[in-house]
Length: 120
Image (cartoon, rainbow, N blue to C red):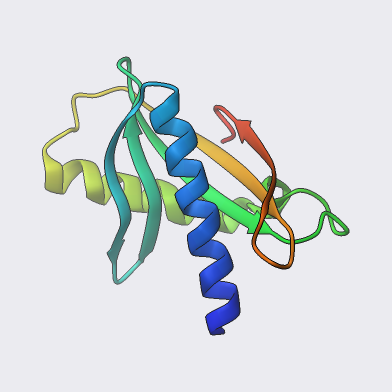
């Protein structure tokens, strides 16, 4: 991954995290990773544990970011969620999987955010 793409992704994750905090959610983890992959954001909305996949783009020419979270990525996030819950001893909690799409300009200025709750 190029530095530019990584910086865009990080900016989008920062915006998504700020958005979730502004909704009153508690951030449990960010960029939690294992050999299998990485969870972008793990949060608690007061009712359940939510695993949030963040997709950041600088154009909607090919659709919104959440449209790129295909079946394979969904399966990976599910497996990571199980690992996370086991390591943190949170198996008793109800869970949900969300996707947040963040649209930025090429200069990394915020344009739009779409939050798809219960995405998969």
